[in-house]
Amino acid sequence: MKSSELWRWCAVGCFAMLSATSVMAEMQQGKPDLKSAGPLTFGREGVLFVGDTASAALFAIDTKDQTSSGNKTVKLEKVDQQIAAMLGTTADDILINDVAVNPESGRVYLSVSLGRGPDATPVILRTKADGGLEVMSLEDVSFDQVAIPNAPAAGGSGRNDKRSQSITDLAFIDGKVIIAGLSNEEFESNLRSVRFPFSDADDGTAVEIYHGAHGAYETRSPVRTFVPFMIDDQPHLLAAYTCTPLVKFPISDLTKGEKVLGTTVAELGNRNRPIDMIVYKKNGKNYLLLANNARGVMKIATDDIQNVEPITDRVEGGGTAGLQYDTIEGMTGVEQLDKLDDGHAIVLVSSDAGKDLQTVELP
Image 1 (cartoon, helix red, strand yellow):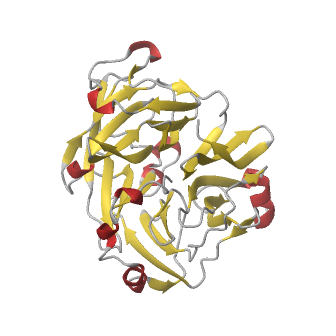
Image 2: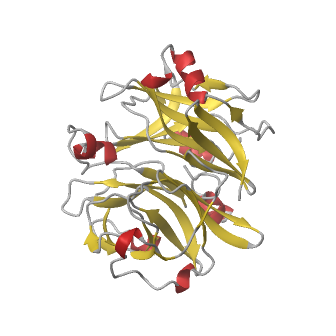
């Protein structure tokens, strides 16, 4: 997720040592052994990063997709049923896990599980220039992979299936993939920074937050979704947690083996799970757009985020505090979103009729 705005932060010189030729030369050729396909994000030169929670591993795949089709209008109605028909099953037997836009081409990629449970088959699909969908072949591709060394053990179900939360979200910035998820450490919530091309991943940074709705400091709840964000010219992460604190972390604090306390800048209401978010600018102001499962899509102004008083006391009764939000009434049922360009986003919208994948104007 959140691919199109990330590597714009860096000048071209940031990547001088990692040219497309040198990156691809360090990748292997063959078929990546994906056990699952979860969170997605893009790097440069059409490299797709795929979080494989079943294996607790991160894959990088060269999509060879760097040419824009010029068609930025996506409208795929009942896309879940279209995917099911392509895969020879029914919509009830697939899960769309994530959606990401390739900033090089504007094509939309989807990670899908065919089947339910631990035996589900991972599939990557993408939009075509003519507006349709195709399965992306994983035969004989250039790829790289890295294992997460301290991931939770496999097994369990429901909330106790911590392995499925070993990777909850991804972002690429300054030659590194930032990975949110759970570890098997005492401080379970973890943020990792893995340089690409991959070498061995380290144990990451243990993260702690103050949860306003719960009135307590927490170390076990994973970041559900996050975006890189500049505050006072310093790179940060804005991270959203279940029930629903919004927290900022300076990226410079993400040091391997250390513990870091984030700054809670908003409590957005309890009994709610954040799904996806992007940052954008409109009419000269900066905003965060955050989709949730119970409280709709929130538009949050972020220009004054550096002056927000940190939340360190309980927020009673399901109330809100810190940064405030407006609910976008015209965006209901949003399950996934990613930024397409400066004025548009791609959203996956669920209704009783099925799921639609479409382009929308940023509010």
